Length: 472
Ligand SMILES: Cc1cc2nc3c(=O)[nH]c(=O)nc-3n(C[C@H](O)[C@H](O)[C@H](O)COP(=O)(O)OP(=O)(O)OC[C@H]3O[C@@H](n4cnc5c(N)ncnc54)[C@H](O)[C@@H]3O)c2cc1C
Image (cartoon, rainbow, N blue to C red; front, side, top):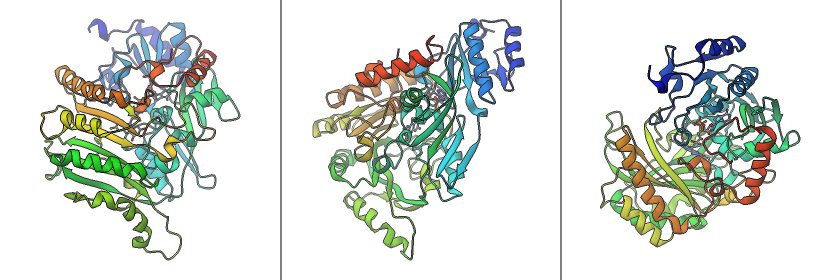
């Protein structure tokens, strides 16, 4: 056992914790240690002091009290999609929330209560059985908790706003060990902070959110050769200026890796990919699918008229929206980072094409631009710390990073992309797309940050809990 793989506490101390909880404690001495400490992002090499997998809120409380007794930090992780900014977790107790399961759909109230260890794929499937939809992001295996703690940008963001603005109740154990229910009426500052302010104040055990009676959407992907990057980016940017709010799209300069499991038409190819979803009227009477799709087709037509080589847009059950963006189906080693853009003028487009277009070799899998505007750019009434996103676009640059050398190359290429767009960045970034450490002032306006810091002092005065984007 190397020094990095030993706990700071004797094994019998962790045995005492294990005796106090229904869940499981794993230390470096246990078989299964490597699986227990592994994050979804395989590039993250996490070495916490021990990993606790709680079964209920009281287990979480015991773990937090134990951490306080032994001067450890507490880090909660559902999947570890956002593991990169957390570092090696030395001196931390990692609370792996996977066993905090449960999905309870209330078809009358149109809400769903989910355990904080649940991933979106399972919620989406459970809701689809009732003809309902939650505001999932592009990747089905992202955790519901981490996503909502940051804000939650779904394919319906421009018509329905951020997913966090539809959260109605959060159950959590605070950094000072209190088991609380936070709503607009009760523990309002905790409720505010946990909707966009990250998991800095408490370990969330369950979340209740509104869901929507939506069965299908007009969704898919348009692929163009990467050689058309400048033309398609310019046209998409112009289209996005007054595109109907029913549409939420993404554009990527995409280099598909030569992975054998991918279909041949994608494998090793380079594209400009535009994908997303357009909300449609739900089946009510005798309207045909063609009639229901007509408005969405009209919205998409300026992009279709560009003549993609592949066009998969069509009516699709919302249970399949997780396929649209072709995010990796399971853990991968990756590195990336993002920022919010106020504008995407011609000069910025030219720089992006220089850095990731057809005439360069790039280690980046994708330079992605997500479309904002519409409801996601308007503060949601009664919303939390992040009730809207700044700017007209998000930019995110990402690459596969199986080795430290590859990670360094990807990070350098991603930094070059973000540096190039700096003149047009909005100054306040979205934490779910920031995968590097960022000063809190870069994530929240001053008034929001002051309120978050007050919540931190109120609920986690000893700074026990560390999340990917600390606010202290
Ligand atoms: C392929 C891919 C696609 C994505 N697509 C989108 C998208 O479409 N829209 C979007 O908004 N985002 C998207 N994201 C970003 C994603 O929402 C963030 O990475 C999010 O933080 C992941 O949450 P998680 O729970 O899966 O990850 P984790 O790494 O487990 O957690 C993320 C953060 O939340 C904290 N946390 C997790 N669980 C708890 C808890 N129970 N209590 C307290 N704190 C907790 C962690 O400490 C960490 O700081 C995407 C990311 C990837 C990798």
